[in-house]
View 1 (cartoon, protein in one colour):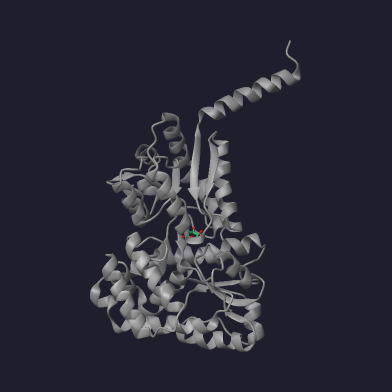
View 2 (cartoon, rainbow, N blue to C red):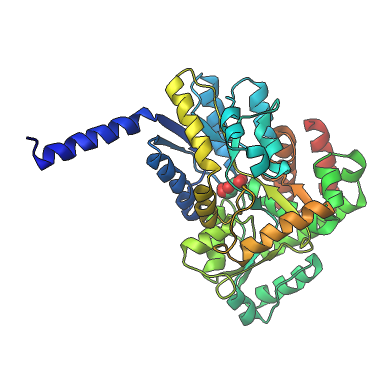
Length: 415
Ligand code: GAL
């Protein structure tokens, strides 16, 4: 007769055997901040429960530029990961290069076409078949504020760019930092994008930065955008160069700074710090953009595998990602809203509710636009040109007119 221990050992062997048979995934991502890590860990956990083991391939660097560089070198050397955080038009670029695997059978059997908004599902398909699975919808046009800093400065939360300058000056005069900012190209571009949206409105945004319409780019509105953007130079601190975005968020969390303009992944940092919306921090649409929504959908694209076990594990991963559990917990941690439609709202906070409402209403008014600062709107070459122009301008004394002219030139050269 077997001892209790031996029985336990054989049960363990049995279950580890069946777990091992569900395969393994190596996943490239850039989610290394507190809120991001909590989010991606849940995916790892869900896959573990489904018997898929996880090899973490994290490449630090907000916005994912570093991760994309590393991904390219791995792919070129013929050794891409099983799945990688790739989004927007880049999915098509990787598809064109022949790297991506279809997960259409998983998508069909789970009815993804009806589970996802059209604006999301179309980005996930290459030549009509799903090659990527969306984890969330981030809204980028947010302003995060510390109400205590505003109280101390006698300032009110701004809703237009003109008012932003007035309120930021009050915070500065009270001896605090008005705008917490990390001087990295993608963060400069994120703030620039918010200015484009708030100053020009979604119609101009779409024409100039999605359709790349020459007249819209080369217009008086673009000069006005650079004027407003340039004024923000006066509200950041001298230590901003190179600062990571989550460090900038922590300046708002601890009351060193009044505001940050950043997508709602910032909320993940407030959450990790145990802060509550309304009392400890406030979220409002970035100035002048309350009816609009710059969307940024994170997704995992799957790379073709010769090993059938790995391909099977990709299917399990894709299935888990669209599951109700994953979409709920991941997005509660990440600060985003679920990509999957019809999810219960009650556990989400008021910022997420605002985001959910704005996603629907802006899609009816034309205010729903893809984020160019987060790889959703234009090719990598064009977004690189916009990054360069925004960052060069912000870190110099270049005039608004000159900045606008440089943008026209850079976009023309890149497209
Ligand atoms: C974005 C990404 C987000 C977020 C952010 C900072 O591009 O979509 O998920 O984590 O970068 O790393």
